Image (cartoon, rainbow, N blue to C red; front, side):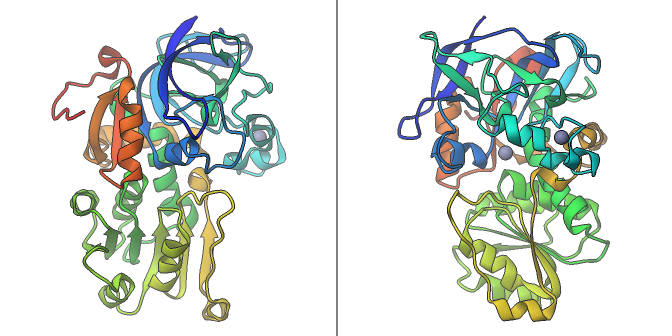
Length: 382
Ligand SMILES: [Zn+2]
Ligand SMILES: [Zn+2]
């Protein structure tokens, strides 16, 4: 079938909405009618070629939600009409990482999906001239419809509006997982969050739910620090005004935080996270660092029991966690609408990427199908 989709032909060219061909789902695949999709900073890395060479041409988008339209053979966990959040690591459940309880690191996904192919190593997407297109980060949800591996479609309660559910599959899983699965923050422990964008705000919300205090949010944009307070930050540091932000964080927390989360992906902010933690503390790098970029810390400080750790996609079982995170949103414990600073339609994707490049706003949600997304249009500023 022919669909409209956001195509990255090459990092040197802007992302454009084009008509592309989408083949029907094969065995263990699901066709999803996309309701809405979130634009994440990783999409900027993708569009700018910073994931490394070879991630194009592709249909972009890795955070979204929609309704199942049809399923291929051997799919039993979802049926047409089900509401689903998309999960960009459709774990195979049989490789050694999956069996060891680390499905976010699934080896089969790494082998077949690294270059945007589905789990059998092939694509369902092509340009009208026959050129094969990648399923961007195996999800390709900046599109009217997408075919994903069965494990990439996770059923969620239909009560949660899909324009909000669209955020679950990357930002929420990643931010919540960094706090719950990696740091395992305990009540009363101190947290600093460096970068209060779409994912950083989820880290702050997760720290609040964990009972952390204080929670210090840092950013260079005042608007995002206001959002950070709404998500649970007890203190904010504006790095455009405060020339010694690490000193400020250390002062607030009496000598350094228990956990610092870096949610930008730059060597200098990773270094800030390292300097913000107390002896025995842990700096967690959540941000996606561009391919080829190195980060350094003073080696002798490992003597003070400090740890620098990485995380990918929440470091837990993203698909298993999604329904619980949807429930947290339904109960009001997680305010998903509160991190959305812009709403637009599919044609707004390039403008959304440009805002992220400038560091403006938190999340843009692209409403692909207004009726399915159940977006009321309140506060629309696209
Ligand atoms: Zn993302
Ligand atoms: Zn696996």
